[in-house]
Image (spheres, rainbow, N blue to C red):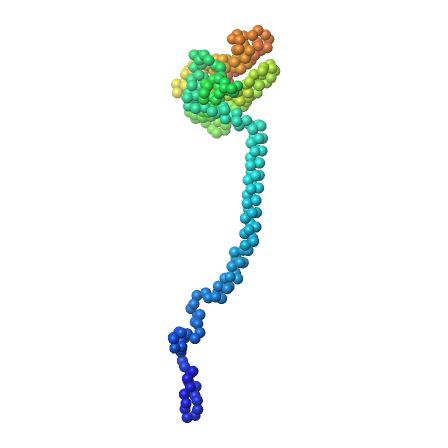
Length: 305
């Protein structure tokens, strides 16, 4: 502030300054710092420091949360492994998964040879299943070993061909195709159950399992497919001729395969052993083989017209 002398005394003359003008100091610096346009200063930093721990959380919470999450993950993984072991144990009790893997261990060469054996079994001589350390070898290494791949695919193909046959006759419907599939499956299950009951009543000591019987009973679908396709392409006479050939082929296939399973004593000696029990076993073998052509005709004759 400047003070000038006048006649009446000292008079104050205010010094006008712009807001953004340079300061009064000799070095040109401002007397007071202008914070109107400045960024966040120390007070803003102090406020951020106060709000920081509230938003980020205390360090102790992080130290406690990591062990708890690791413990929860370890506990969850242990529960999952225990549940998986329990499911595998109970599932293997009712459905032998390991045995099913054996019956599906096939390749293209085996499938081709097996199909040829089912349609032309007359020239085949060696019908014994090969063993390795008292365990039968996988089907892909032995054409005489039973498998479930051909019966499963045969059943599915039979249903598809049956639907095609119904479609060519303008009789196709999802309900009728479902009845066809369910009836074929029921007959297959009943056949296996009857064979198991017969083996129990005759008291036959054999290494045949339920899966073996299911595989042998499912081989007839190959002949059924051949008969249906021949009937669709060339008419009813071709159906009867091809089905007759396949029925004779499956009869011989079942006789030569089942007699080694049911007549093990006779097969070991190379001749039939006299006795009532062996005669019952022979009759049972003949009955199982004779039932295959009956089922083949029963499940296909109404599909060709």
